[in-house]
Image (cartoon, rainbow, N blue to C red):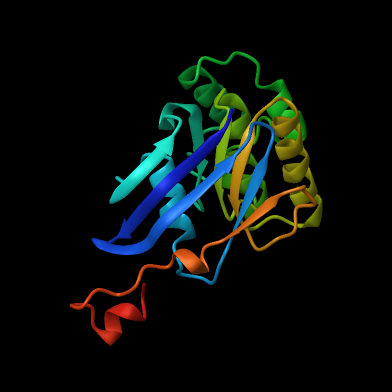
Length: 205
């Protein structure tokens, strides 16, 4: 499924940080977001996902077709790996968690409680949920945090499979995932400070 935006303006804390963002990613395509820390990559992804309103502009398609994965893993410590994935499968109307377990090398950890997992293992569990959403568009914010090289390769393989099935991905990452990704540098879209913005405020835009 194609995904994109037209003349999109995004705000953080009531201040416009990105203005006039326009792009289109075709089905089966992947877009990598580039730009210095604080430029608004997370803000853009959250706006695309419908988690915060756009200041102006248009996003297509609906957020109902998008799955957003943030920095947080969002797993309950008391639940096992299997229970965690089964919970998300029920939420999204899925029934088979086996592909998600296999894709992220979680089979041997299936009965372990999430609270006993390492940071990398929890990250893999959090990312495995993407495969249960049934959403065609994945919005990924620094997905490789806490992952070692082998786990990064697993994640890249899951994304590649998603793309091969006609899915689409937009990824904010500093890691080369080996994907044939188009690049979008957000620097040209950085909003100019308004007349009422102080030098202190500007430093945190």
